[in-house]
Image (cartoon, rainbow, N blue to C red; front, side, top):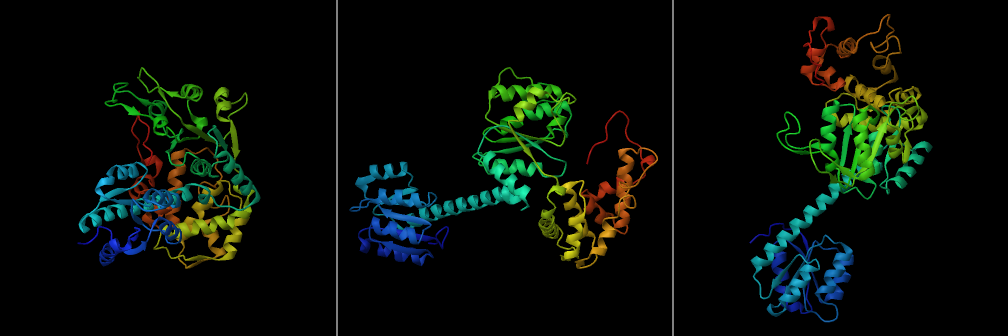
Length: 465
């Protein structure tokens, strides 16, 4: 019979080795790597040098018994399954071992098929746990400090501050210009702190109208409004035990600001149309690119002070230009990964130096877009400094966004002009232009038309793509 998961490392423990040598040979024939230990002390010494995937141990042994082996192995690695072997008369002890964390117990005498069955299951569980831990570490790295690029003094100071603040559950208000990476900081605060195993939920307060924003945030009861055919829990409940990141909170309507203030005060959420509230334990991290305090602000000052318990300021890219070469290298590698068919394979040092000298009003987000554009549009393997003039024209001579105008243009006009300009820069290739713009090719065919020739439905806002 073949084991479910052959190839695992099995430690077999018994103070009568002659009784289990046959079992060890049979397990080896099934593809397992087997090591024998003639007692509990020898087993623990072996496990420290050669951590097994599964431990199969006798329960009754002199001096160091199966309970001691179980405790010692779990101290080394609590994910290692321990299967207890016991005589019929000691089943109560075996059940006690299960309560202490043993994976399973086998009653002597047992059949080889039974051993292989539970070894296979234990090994499969062990590997699933290892995969989960690896994925969790990867997610944490991508969401924590490892997702933040920069070694300048201001970034080092920010890392130290994040490390301290992450251990708290107090509200945080992140301030910084658009494109500086406020959400990355919020993710680092969550994944570097004690709430990392719970949900990190994001809500952009600018993206939804007030009615939908309220339902999204607080949830709603069935029949609370037209179309509410089923109850829905809001994001505050989804983030219970974890973190809720409210991006651009300055755009939250004043009525919802008052409801959020009550949540921060009382720790309770009442869905729209519901009669009862629910307790929640949520850490609120908010972000804004504009000032929320002061007499000229329309933002509720009592809510501001509730959120601003721990303020964090994110430096603009112009304040950490030493980090630009690292960012360029990172964005270039990521753009190459997303566009494996791109011609460009390297960027010459003078290009990086030229990018580092520029003023980036759009901060890190603008820099990433430019590097991606260079990778996607370059027709040469090595991107040179001369190429920058084609992709980064001087202000006032390039894209419609840079051009001076005699009259104020509508957003729709600017959008269409810019799309047409990108299509032109891509040699008329609309598919390639869509990649640069980050939109669907079918969308570019609609939006590239002249605004005056396109009729929008009356009485309804245009749907955002």
